[in-house]
Amino acid sequence: QVQLVESGGGLVQPGGSLRLSCAASGSIFSINAMGWYRQAPGKERELVAVIKSGGRPGYADSVKGRFTISRDNAKNTVYLQMNNLKPEDTAVYYCNVAVTTERLVIVDSWGQGTQVTVSS
Image 1 (tube, rainbow, N blue to C red):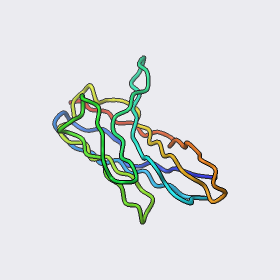
Image 2 (cartoon, one colour; image 1 turned 45 degrees about the vertical axis):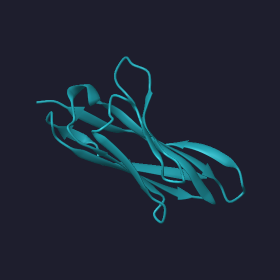
Image 3 (cartoon, one colour; image 1 turned 30 degrees about the vertical axis):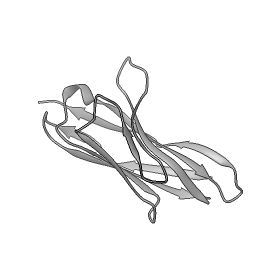
Image 4 (cartoon, rainbow, N blue to C red; image 1 turned 90 degrees about the vertical axis):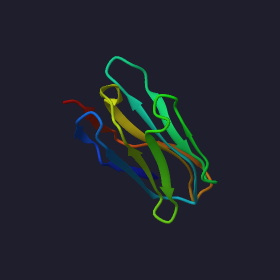
């Protein structure tokens, strides 16, 4: 019913920047919260940033001041601008979108994941 396509991961040196994108498509009536999670090897998945339909963002303490989440409602897309990247930011990043479908069913959808590696 709802598909998410992520892009923008890759290999970057410490102090560098990357921008992740996640576009939602399918049977969408409205999109509520949009967020980014990450999972490093051997660790649990953690919430990195979230933005509600009203636009107010929230961030994990570990990324505050370095990451910025934004959304383009016309494109059903959420972005994560990551600056001053550190080796500990290395992980697979997943977008998560709470969608109300055209049948008024609330669906929690996940992207396929994109690898971010911060290394010199």
